[in-house]
Image (tube, rainbow, N blue to C red; front, side, top):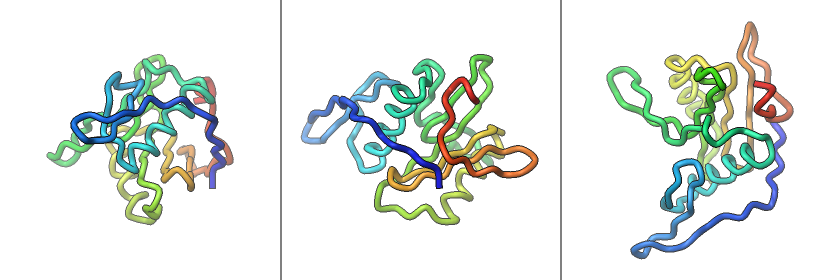
Length: 146
């Protein structure tokens, strides 16, 4: 398992039309505060504030065509050259990270071909580097290490 220690982040939350929302700094808009979104926002803040990932190189809920369907990946990190570097799949805290979740991110990566994959439900994190072999990482790399 990959170690992730979240900092104390300042989230902007509120309510719109009776729905709890959280402001997404990457998408620059309030979004419904679901359990999965809570995890996604923690991951985004961790990447930006703890690991120095530039907001401008992060895509959230990015559309990706897959077998004639349009799918959305949770978080996609780009390199400064515009190539995808890391794909992150976020699940709600109560969801188990089972084989189905790993198959989902692997399907997305058939199209994207990133060198790093990260699956998380906030409590459990699995980040790996893909190369000749799959290497499970102890820690999430800083942006400059991608």
